[in-house]
Image (spheres, rainbow over the protein chains, first blue to last red):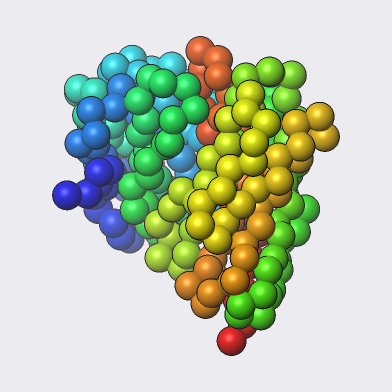
Amino acid sequence: DTAVSQTPKYLVTQMGNDKSIKCEQNLGHDTMYWYKQDSKKFLKIMFSYNNKELIINETVPNRFSPKSPDKAHLNLHINSLELGDSAVYFCASTDDNPGNTIYFGEGSWLTVV
Amino acid sequence: AQTVTQSQPEMSVQEAETVTLSCTYDTSENNYYLFWYKQPPSRQMILVIRQEAYKQQNATENRFSVNFQKAAKSFSLKISDSQLGDTAMYFCAFFEETVFTRLTFGEGTQLTVNP
């Protein structure tokens, strides 16, 4: 069983569309993240949730809205997609013990055309 | 804000040889954790090794070991007996032990192992 799973893995869509990426973890972790990896492969945190509560919002445009229906799920909805949103989006999770391993999903490759 | 710097964008090594990837970081925290993650072409993020800042002993995982110099804020990764499967992007990462827990990544080092 995949520990952190994201869907879809690949997504090609037109500018202006709205799309969602879903993430689920079966590790019983309390904290989940969304990271964005740009074309230069730089990984930057976008959001962090702990037990369904938003604790980090890293100056991400309002077009990005995370939602955590329960602590095992963290979805990312993106409105009015722009070319610059093309990237690989990684979901990740960890437990509440500081410094424990953060487990990543396989990434969702978003291409905006 | 914490920063992580990897000064080698690309490196290459011959199969079976040893290579060292550099990483430096900046923090005012005393308790923190350091990681090396590997990202092969599949883009999967794979944990290579983890170091706790309060432990002086360098972490080791099979062919992978680190040289952790806390005073110098340096955390290099040594790969011994390099294998073709080690070809990947390697990211150094810093985990701060505060309320706003997060993993901060360096820019990455693309390692190519040549046959």
